[in-house]
Image (cartoon, rainbow, N blue to C red; front, top):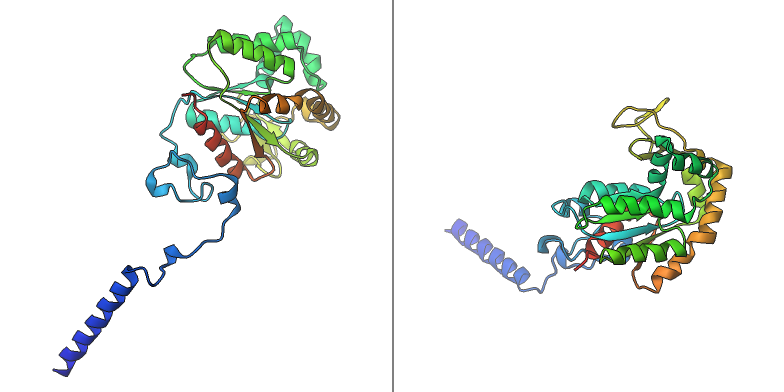
Length: 294
């Protein structure tokens, strides 16, 4: 009898405790306030995430896997930033993840040089010295590639436009196609950090994949080989100190005015490119998906 009484008393106490907690008088761990992290500040949760994930931190959570079902995004975007800011790396990732075409003007020009064409021979010494190819040559290369593309697909222009005149010509090209730019992402970063990044950079010529001796080393360092193909990696001629300083100076003089140009059009999105690559990747995804054409 005593055992039965004790059992009933314990059961009543347990039921009372459950009722007390479910009424909201005693806070559960999920109701405790969490100190905001930098991830909550730099980017809000993606509106396209399922409800079960909409309250999670966008960088702490696997954003890329959440959006992995989104393919062939029609977003038309310009990646704007100094050489070495990471825009090429991010453009490659967007291309692989979402099917958005990556139009790297630097790669297009290098392919023209490798083809041995007359145009390639004309621009070869300019590229090697870190100078800028003329607007006419660049516009012809970009126009030819855009005309060959499926107009329903999106693309990222990386390294173009490089000055306000090219930006105006790009607007005219798009107008003829009855299209507009959806966004311009500015990869903002200090020159000192760029120099540190670029001087250790290695490139796979055929794919454009880049590595870094310190920050993103290939599996094979001596000799340096591409992780996927096993082919040799090179140090680009325009990544050597003197040539690269000239490229930076040219960027500040000719390309930086585009920041103001696109700000006035209200399509400029700024990213802190000094953040670690995973943070930058999450921010880029957020912007690309958010700014799809309606």
